[in-house]
Length: 104
Length: 380
Image (cartoon, rainbow over all chains, first blue to last red; front, side, top):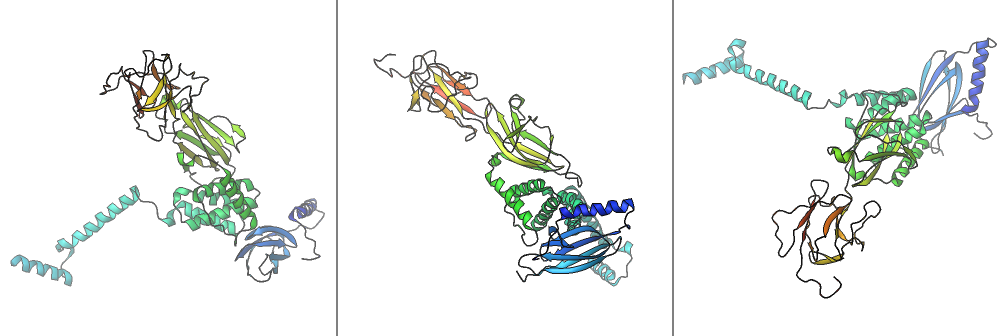
């Protein structure tokens, strides 16, 4: 986390909109999306996708471009979990992650 | 003997399966009994029984809402969970409380924090204390719980004088739906009194909304409202209640009567005894009901202070000394009534007087007497 610049979801939204309009105008190849559903067991977590904090909770749903995405779940007193999920276009991927108490 | 032998033979034949159905008259009776029992059971379930837990639509709704919540489909989860929280559904407490957590968190996640607090306040008002699950739900939800609990602790109301019921919508509704409020009182059966009652609605104690007709539902945005019912002969009663989306909140008030002062006027003034106890002076003139508010112990207007709510069938008799012909017994703020009491014949007295309260159950009887030469040699 140290030295890493977090981009909030509010900052990320214009970037996505820009990409969307670029696609509509035909200036970029069409981006196909999939849906990522993250679900935690064993407690809530701070959920970040691609370095962007999304929400605190036990579930999160996001529409993302197809391709690999990094997922981080963290919470004080619990083991931080980093994983990568590769989304296919049009796919809804449910990822269930167990939170385990451990490092601070 | 023949019959005995025959019956044994029939039973043994039945046991051996040798007789057909037409030859088994006793075997029909249990079947008939079972059929009648089943019919009675079905009728009883239809008439009196609740559906089993698995058939309850509220339970199904909670299950579907929880599934939607677990995949972060909050827009779908919220109406399902809110429908399932119907308190009339008699759901297990753990299921109910878990659904409340999910609903509030889903509302927070969709940017409707105030509405989440309204739901939590409503839940805490009726089911406190609630065990908050801080392991599975994030701090934002705990903050909303704390805010709801704090506001409840600060609110004051006459909850003991109010009965609240909720009419839940027939199915899941959007959280943008208006709620409704209906107010009734135990005085509704007395049209003359009910028309003088006023219902006021206040938001956060500052913003005052228009009035509300008794017995008529009024649509309101979801939130917390202070409902006050007031009337000239009753103590004001206020309660805070939450209006939930799509839910009709029905509040029934029991209005306590104001203390009533029985006053006595005499010309000139006289000492006023009740049951031998000096309570003060009589009033020299009738109190001005518009400007003068008599209170018990007020030396200019001493009388019997009756608390009707404490003793609804109270009947109090007092002896009033030294009355003249112009003396009167009245009550404030109502008109003076006079009626001879039944069965009372005070010795050496003028006519006794009975004051009837404006409500039928309370009767205050005061026996007025002229005491022989009570005062000697003074001004009157």
